[in-house]
Image (cartoon, rainbow, N blue to C red; front, side, top):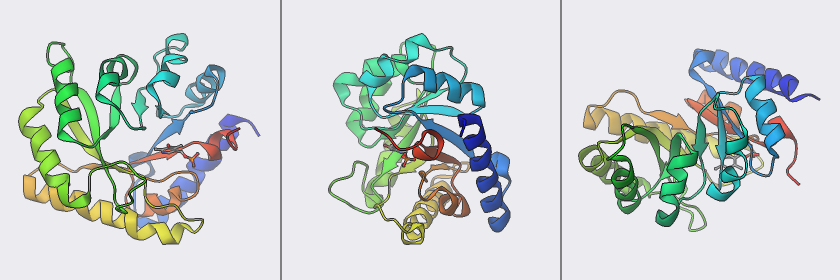
Length: 227
Ligand SMILES: *Cc1c(COP(=O)(O)O)cnc(C)c1O
């Protein structure tokens, strides 16, 4: 099946999930996760009309992005070390994995001299798993406050999470719902406009949309199983 066909099917499934939950399908955007995919596949995804490209690793993006037209934003969706922050800012438009004040400060110091504001998401370890990155839910408010006060060149778009893995998307639903409640609570307490939610992958994106995802990050459902 062609990538454009797969994307059309995914958009239909998103529209159906929106219908079930009373949402506008235009409020859900797709990050095509292109890790392990060659640059030609990334180009095809951009031509097919995905909203953004997502890569986990700075090094891998460095091998692809310079060969591709800058048509859609690139999102970093994998963990970022401070010593890779400069290169990450050269390769990515959006950083979805800010999970500690020191990383936010590093990004801020690199961006501050530039005529640029970088959209970021705060990554939340919603399931509290030791194997996962992200700030613990109880510490999101202090991280968000830190960024709002000390990092004027970072524009917080919302929260991102990779919940505990399950073959049954219904098992994951409570985590998506918790992230939404967390975002709603923060926005209310800090007087912010709505915070976006980056959540949902190939196996559970419809449930994520029902629970309020504004960005779904999709790899295998668009490109097939990774080698
Ligand atoms: C790989 C990855 C995805 C996409 O996963 P699929 O199951 O292939 O859709 C989404 N988010 C993150 C952070 C990933 O690492």
